[in-house]
Length: 454
Picture 1 (cartoon, rainbow, N blue to C red):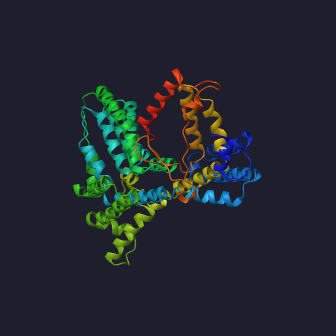
Picture 2: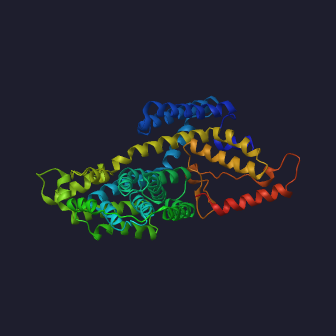
Picture 3: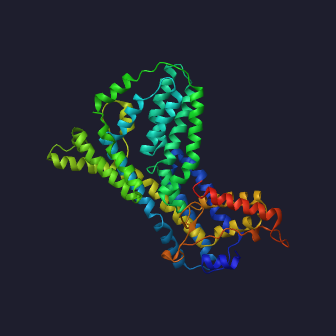
């Protein structure tokens, strides 16, 4: 693609220089580093968003300097943020679902039956499977590692097994479940930034994550050793505070059924959240009334307030058992507002960077220098890194594996980025063909087979 074409795509104004393109990117890197240095784990709760907004203004100032009108930049920002609205609503529904499932006992039931089927002879493999199932159900690897994982490591130490290997099993299962769950915020962030459909993205990632998990489980089986394991005390503690029943799995089955029927992700997840609230009233009415914390209300209104509160701000468990309370106190749409904020600022920054032609100014020279399979791979990797840095203006929607669909007229902003043709990868003065052309064709075939989801 020529510089003139890039300018036409980006908008009016002269072509940005390399320095223009580097300024917002390097500024963002510096501010993110400073953010994590100053705020640590709290950086994602506001400081990073401020950094993205500031760098977006820097990029907009550079674009204005190069002759682009503010009206075009404003419209590009609006289009960029609006392209992520679907993912934002999905995230909000995920928070609501976690809140009602925690109150209904669905999450605790999964933990309970997971511990009951834990095999002492295959402790490591069982730990990986349990963590994978729970993480798949709640969409959080850190939650699983910080609750069930810590418990499993303590159990391993008491059984004379290796806590280090147990930690590896916990992480293997937890990260698999997190990457394969439609409830995961990282999965929804990935689909928002890539423009892919949620369940299509998950289906593609399974091609690599399932074999990886199976290989890990086989390794953990080989590393396991027969040993005695008694989870009676843990199970008794759960039974003391909750009436565990298989009926608690109804919301989980319902969500899976709607997912198989290929209903939109937001509809599927939010309906699962509403059903979780209904099951909480049926299975744990006293818990719902207690959570409503308003004795003046009639019972039906107390039920409504309790479920409504769990949907909005999440459930807070108060059983007196620290492990159970830590596992169940979570969820609510409110818990997802920080992530939604991050998506909005990232998309706004990416929209300005792309509209100003800064991204193309960085990427095109790299693509033009790719004249071999190794160069092509390096260029693609670099381009994907740049796409992540820009917060990602929505690229074309993804359909089947290797298929790219785009609608150039959608909201006036959907654009299809052309992949480099074999002719672009031939040295100047050369002709396509021979070993280079064969390598490029093989690389393109491989990319079409693997697909974007990988």
